[in-house]
Image (cartoon, rainbow, N blue to C red; front, side):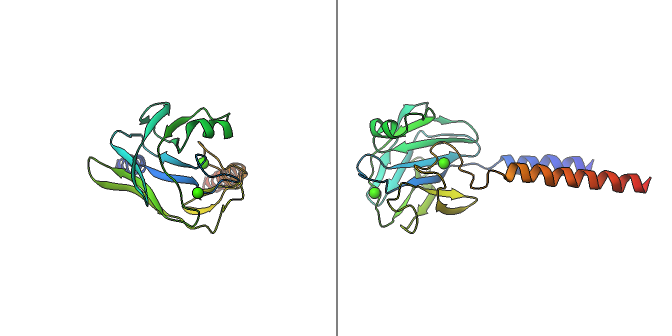
Length: 190
Ligand SMILES: [Ca+2]
Ligand SMILES: [Ca+2]
């Protein structure tokens, strides 16, 4: 019984990750920056963005819905762009949640984030530098909690750009080997 309770508590703990995070930044797109910058946000447990503002060095900026709604389902991504027309020109295949706001992201680096006007809390903040993705067509992407350059030209708006796509296969093989080892050990015990 204790084991069942432990498992239930563990599942609750892993699903109770609330909040929003900035997951990708296109601060210096190749060519002209004006209107073509964007930020990707991720909601692990689902969120409603009413009262949420995007902020940068110039202040807080209202988020307007272009595609989808202010409700982000659990595990979803959304893009906050500076100009929806230019964003959809650059990414015509993008059909996910799209918000527009007003901002100009520094090509040197600055602090950006999400601010909750109701609770006056900063939900997430990132101080980026121009070490990566500085005008070469790639984005700055949060990959396993590290800010790195995207492996895909143009970045990965609306999805996680796993730099090791074979990880799924590797994990499957490791699980399979582990399962076979456990089975053979159990058989030996008998
Ligand atoms: Ca810029
Ligand atoms: Ca992404």
